[in-house]
Image 1 (cartoon, helix red, strand yellow):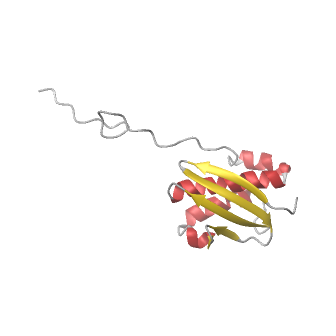
Image 2 (cartoon, one colour):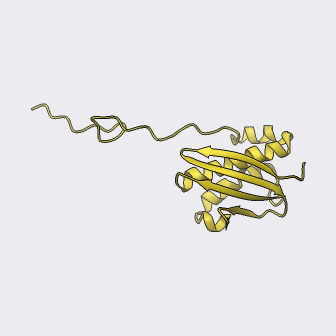
Image 3 (cartoon, one colour):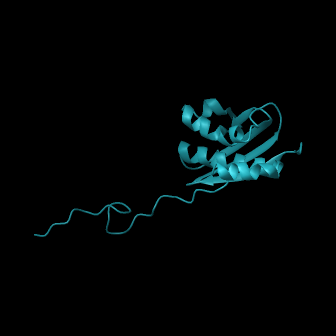
Length: 130
């Protein structure tokens, strides 16, 4: 395990998270706020901690995150991927554990574009025969 800081990027939908990780006592800051304060719902906070819990490294690193774009769900997913990538850069042996948990894959799903002549991407205007 290296003691220097690690910078990794995670993305989800339209959210981008830059994760700066260095050894410390487990303090997690998101946009200069405490992680628990930033994500008010428990499930999003747990999603952010998932890579740390899966590798038993909770409390070993100080993590500073700058996240922008998207909503809270997309931001939580971006942070999760960024933390997982930073953990792998610090310790390559964790990669297989994170891969089994599905934390190393970038989720490619994004909003489908709106098509012309339709109100939304797939919704159609009501059809009238007469």
